[in-house]
Image (cartoon, rainbow, N blue to C red):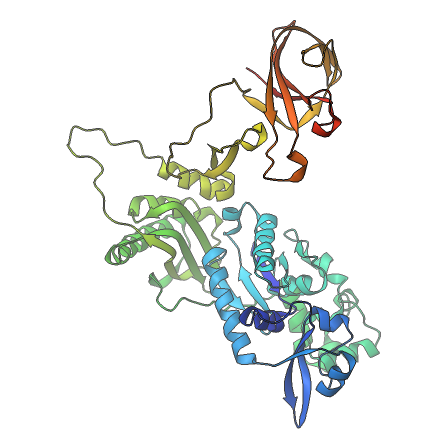
Length: 505
């Protein structure tokens, strides 16, 4: 099923101006002005200006009177459009093979077959909105089965993201106002006069009287938001793409034929990459069906690759996600993301064994479960146990860093440490028993304490914080790693409570 993401940028014009001119004070309201005949009017207002009561279409003189100190700049719609196209190209490289501006304040992406690389639709939308928000742009996002539904949900429901489950878009858009249908303002006002307020009010009505009164546009928008008719997306393309294309005299649909054509496209693409000294990090396969609805597949690699066998295997693993419909008439394969890749010698003599290469396995797994879910642990220099490990990409080169081996550490850490009930005879002694998760355990052996100090350079609360760790063994032979928060005397060094932090074996 087709899945479409709509990104809504409610203050795109003013956010872009602030990005271009960082000297603008962030606390001052900003409006962009244009001309309506001889009048100068407000064409765009940022969040601060809207909160002060300024509205689009308001005379500029009135806006200046209402908000003293108002920042004013000239509107530049051409630059706004170019900015949207550049943003669409960035999203195209990072998230989906079919991406286009949705002027004047949005981007639309066909993410069918691409969300698996980002850990699912929810994580993908969160990543999109998080990156754009960090760059200074207000953004809301929604994903649904059609462009119309995603467009409506992004503007009238997302806070800041909304994921409409497949097949559930109709119920979610029924409660939205008529303005979400992208109809002319006059049509919306006319429908309001007849008592229609929500989209759901129109769904059960006969189409013929409405079409006779308002034209075919109303019925077309209803069918688009319900996904009954397709709404093609004209994607943006890089200026110099590395791409191969194959058109068929007769439409194809069999999986074996698609796989054979895929292999031929990859074989044709790899020499283009080699001529530029590049390897593919991301490949986009777009199948153009006879009904104009494209089917896209995106695969990624952990390292630059131009081995036809490996790339063909990654793409063929995703053939099951392609719906050929009534047939595919054109297939295009593009290397969307590339990196330099130089030839290297893998072995100096024929009898030498080449080092094991797990890159192929990593790529296969990453394209099935998502890149973010495939990682390995790496050491971090820190005294606190919960900070000595971090996640890094699976094929990151090895470094000389390692975990210190002065003191034994448990194989399993609890996050966060769980409180336990204990009785200790003396402040520096291990407990004689402790209760964890309702089970009381008598301590047969113990070793410690190992004193761990807080990292004072991170935050003030750790300036004098300490922990005293003990390795203890109960009567059943199970070994635990427990600690007391504080030195047992000064309350400023910790809560003086006992916690279980890990389990050995």
